[in-house]
Amino acid sequence: DLVAQWGIIKREIFIGSWIIIGIAIVLYLLGVIRFSHDSPIKKIKGTRLVFIIVFAVATLYLIPGITNTKWANLRLISGFPPPLCYSLYKHPVNCERGIEPLRDYDEALRIAKAENKPLLIDFTGWACVNCRRMEEKVWVDPDVASKMKNDFVVVSLYVDERQTLPAAKQLEYKTKTGAEKSIITVGDKWATFQSENFNAVSQPQYAIISTDEKALTKTKGYTPDPAEFNKWLQCGLDAFKKSRK
Image: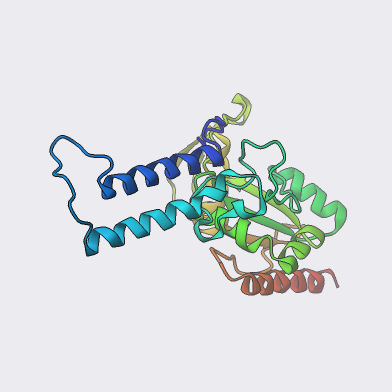
């Protein structure tokens, strides 16, 4: 649903479905729900009791996730459900709008040149769990958010974007290994751009480049520690300032 951008299984629907499943499992373990081949439960013993407690606690934890409150972020399972902004609510309380990445590389590069800022490339995917974890746990850190918003031009390139490119931009591309690759969708374009220029096919991958498209640091992958990610951003920013002298 996320990859195709249908907008059907929003965050609350996804979480609500798991709440229903959790309740059904608890009721089954308690013997309230039985199938034809099940024997009556006379006494709830050790292992069954443990499973009942585990599923009951997990289900209770999910319940705030269907509300539009600050408790709906469910940080412990960040990245598993759809993003906070992919919501049924018109104005989700937890939807962070501090960082608005661009979606087009050429436009981002043009803005970076105009504003004399380094370009932070976020290779991501709609179906990338670790990408959502980075956005919901690391990007919201005050120091990280401040740098990304004020010191960089950020562009997010979705390698699984299924939108078809205009016919004039579709092509057969020969990679640096000599393989032929069809560039049909936006995702094909960005996935090839990543593999050809940064020698990687995994997401998330972050790259900091100058306005003349030179790498300023080594690329960075999934980094759940905000302090470490912030340190990497600072290294890229320092390298950019040094290159301007």
